[in-house]
Length: 215
Image (cartoon, rainbow, N blue to C red):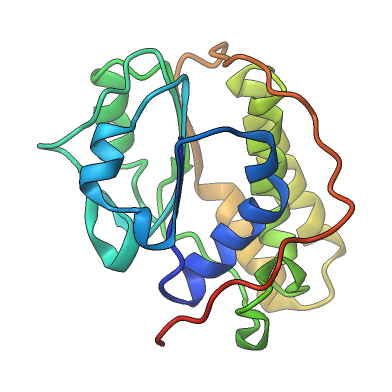
């Protein structure tokens, strides 16, 4: 399952990179934009992996228009799944709760997930050169999972690429964001958990521009 809201600049930025580089490798359900609602999310949480973009705090993860999708009192079927939440702070309480509810492995962040974005790229967020140093390590982490490799390998990809990008980044604000994200990345549960490998897909052309949103 993919949960990809598009209702503000941060969700469009993170979801946009996954739409460009991850969505073609996955089948339904793909809850994109207004489809990313609790009723559909709870009903369609099937398969062996949940990959979600959305705003979060220690105890909850939200989707379209900040509708709460998961909180400590409402956890969907995560039994045997690998869960990746591209969100703020969910590793504090929600991540452990997902593991306690039967998820094999969880990757997320202890603090806010921070990066620099270009508002002029809102229609084609995957072209945002300011966001790419933070978002592409996440993309590569997710694709490592979809390659059928273990969660520990995906986590190493995430943290190593964040720190590697920080080491060569000339903008100190972007570099500090990358180091912060690497420091606060979290892997919980079974580090050897893996999902069924998905076929690799070439990405010669980007998708069409995303539909407009109300700021």
